[in-house]
Amino acid sequence: MSVEQKNSVTLATEGSFQAVGLKWEGTFEAAFAGEIRDVHNKIHDRLNEIQFVENPDVLLGLSYHATQSGSSFTYYSVVKASQVEDVPSGMIKISVPELTYAKCEHAKGQSIEQSFNNIYDWIKAEGYKENHVGDLTHFEKYPMAQNPYDQNPEFTIMIPITK
Image 1 (tube, rainbow, N blue to C red):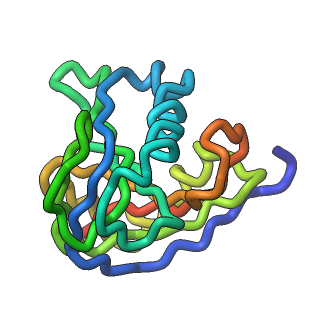
Image 2 (cartoon, helix red, strand yellow):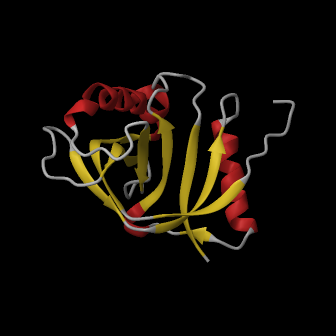
């Protein structure tokens, strides 16, 4: 890439929320090979089964700490729900507490790796550290209308932080 990629980072507090969707566990290699895109596609197909969806235009991808071996992690492809009475078959309910995040917009055409490097560099430079409450390492917000198989996606990166 000939032009240096800059991503502005801001602080954002996100209130606690409940979400419903699909759980995936696997290796980083399997994730990069497209298995997470398959999970996003399944949520698109099953969105009408989830009740009380707060914002049907936003798909959340929540990443949780790798296993002891460090070779795999848990990922949830979910939508926020204002209340959860019935969880559709094969889906899960997850709760996320109120947290402060380093927030960064990843635009189409940018390097995903560089966007993550930029936000982690900002966290360190500003004197923050990651705050893995409940093992949540980060989450992304995707436009629901975006094709899950788009090789050049846009999304928002949210990394929980503390001073």
